[in-house]
Length: 471
Ligand SMILES: NC(=O)NCCC(=O)O
Ligand SMILES: [Zn+2]
Ligand SMILES: [Zn+2]
Image (cartoon, rainbow, N blue to C red; front, side):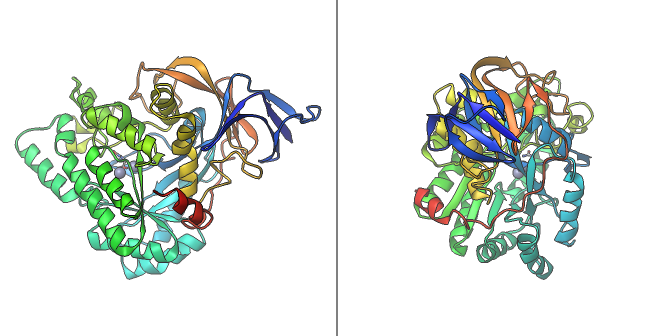
């Protein structure tokens, strides 16, 4: 099977140029011009950009949380991702303290196998470091190709790990070649503040934000950075929301630490006032960390532009407003945390970032695709337009203006955090491993064609490039 994409403008993390792309089977076999058209399917990309398919390093599909389960599973979540131009996700495999890692990984394979529209991989949560966990970790890396471990510094009595666990995870990750990811908020302080708020009868959604102050994120981020430096290990801070956390990451990087930061579309574009909406509507905007004062958005955009933060995750974690977010109608601590974002991640970044002049086209590709592929052992098969790379490609029309709505989105959830927002640019065609899966605003793929990817160890293929870029 041959496909040629003609007349488009190829955009990678480093270059922008006009060329045609020849795809044979699942991969890009040539980039150039004058390819014979006779025995190929030809896609005309005139007037459009061609991006490498997006790589979303942060999703929670089919995930239990707060007595309920996320609305989007691997089928609806990955299909919606494809509509938004994302062709690879890395989802968080949750584990239970005291239970074998192997069992948790099997469970996540069961949730996803044969159900995904795009390729996917897993990060693994480490809740507690024990001898059993230490024994299992080499298997996790060598057999499962899971080369990133997630430690929660918040969600006390649920996911939260202690500092000893974080430190031992950092040491082990260094030895085995994995990247440690942290949800950096001080869970003990938040626990104290939420109990105090409830005791004072403060139950509305806004108290979710007011009991998770920026200092709690800044402190935890700084602590994680210091422990990483002490362990001479490597760290990726997920969903950075505020200046206090950005400063800690930038300071650690300037000191030479191997530390990376991710932010999300919601923190770049929505603010704390969303949580004050009447009729419990504020619950739709309950994320942890919470949405912040508007001034933090400039800091986050600036960090993306200047390299202080390097990636964009969706933190897709969707719950219906009706019946799920409503669990917290009398008590904000019972509102399941998270929101739908997998479909709009790239759209928001393009429209609010590139079209508004806050980041350039190449930075857009880097933060939404290439950098995550590099950090999480997927590059150059994913996140790149190069010979031999998987033909995961997005044909993107920058001239279309469209309106985001839950009426037209492809996530299963009953609201969209950007309802009614006009965005510049639209995904026209998406290819996954050489096959057209999105065209004419329809899903043309086959659910189940998305397969599990075993990832390379941290830095294995890219250590030199990463160090060279690492300022
Ligand atoms: N972010 C959020 O509110 N929900 C998803 C779980 C997490 O990433 O902390
Ligand atoms: Zn988190
Ligand atoms: Zn998350």
